[in-house]
Amino acid sequence: MLSDQTIAILGIGNMGRALLGGLMHGHDVDPAQVRVTRRNTAALDALAAEFPGIVTTTDNTEAARGADIVILAVKPQTVSTVIDDIREDLASETLVISILAGITTEALREALGQDVPVVRAMPNTPALVDEGATALAGGRYAEDVHVGRARAIFEAVGTVEVLPEDMMDAVTGLSGSGPAYVYMIIEALTDGGVKQGLPRPQALRLAAQTVFGAAKLVLDTGRHPAILRDEVTTPGGTAIAAVANLEDHGLRTMLINAVATATARSAELSRLNHK
Ligand SMILES: NC(=O)c1ccc[n+]([C@@H]2O[C@H](COP(=O)([O-])OP(=O)(O)OC[C@H]3O[C@@H](n4cnc5c(N)ncnc54)[C@H](OP(=O)(O)O)[C@@H]3O)[C@@H](O)[C@H]2O)c1
Image (tube, rainbow, N blue to C red):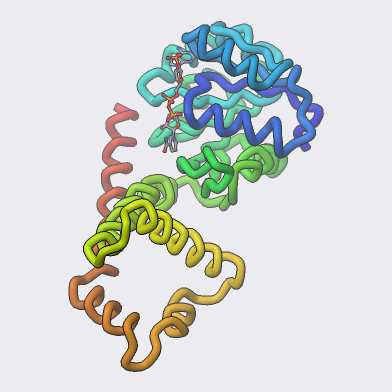
């Protein structure tokens, strides 16, 4: 699906680097088909050494010219500069994929000044270790083939859900921001272990692996988390005593409200971006 595509990643920072790694390791993509940009030339040289054959340049115009797919991976506050760089030379059939938080496909299409297909993606940082959760939404001119190409790119760094664009704020509140909540849970579980006398390094590894393993069991078995939880809670045992404590302190409500708060903030930031 991507083997005949020339791909430009504009703004190759953390997320762009994760996508480049996925393209190089998870696909039949010739490195010469991939162009990446950022302003820091030393960082570009390091990328060229790590991925021999890719084209590295500080010139967004040159990178985007003739590319089949252009991935916008800069920060939202920088995107207007990059769009100015590429607008004139972008072919109308170029697929533009944006990972910019809070910027709609329509806003990008308008800024680009032509009816190009735009696919919006909301990945998360576990994409850096190929365990990302990405949601995709196709814009007005994006057809199945375009969403399919975007899916292929993000599936190399994790799982993909295709959703309507008006759900992107909720995605930002759940999986986009979610790693932050889970890190807090891992940190707190670690402290819990340390409080009970476990050495910190072992407590951290046990906590992180417990979160990872529990998540893997949900995904691999497809079983409802409540059923899996029931299986851990022996009558009169340790886990049910702790579960009762968590219920008492409103863990579920806290997490539901966390997603709601982040979703509302994402919507607020999107409105600011579109002013
Ligand atoms: N991190 C997340 O959890 C996450 C999740 C979902 C979506 N996103 C989105 O992903 C995007 C990138 O995030 P990130 O964490 O990867 O940021 P990042 O590491 O700062 O990457 C952005 C890169 O853009 C480059 N850049 C800045 N100005 C440029 C220009 N004029 N031309 C070309 N490159 C330029 C910067 O490098 P130089 O300074 O060398 O130019 C930098 O490496 C953001 O829009 C964010 O909303 C991030």
